[in-house]
Length: 131
Image (cartoon, rainbow, N blue to C red):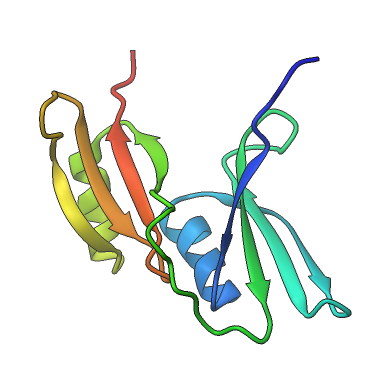
């Protein structure tokens, strides 16, 4: 049997704001959005390609929960970008919260930065220069 990572799920307080962040600022596509009225929740899947061949992000919005305590167990979602300095400049101009400016990681040479989504989830940006 072949295993495949399908998605990571995070709970969000304002689904429209989260979709705008992931699609507008981070360039993902809204792949599908389904309301479940009997359960009072909505699932929205966003990503950089179809779910058959790409890992995506599931945004879960429970209609009666406006925000969540993020806790200390979840770390971050990581995205590869070709030019981290230009990316962070564009994100900052668009209003993204940059919590760690781009630069080499401590104890290494990989260039990283961190931003936060509207709910406070950490997104790590890792520079991946094109070959």
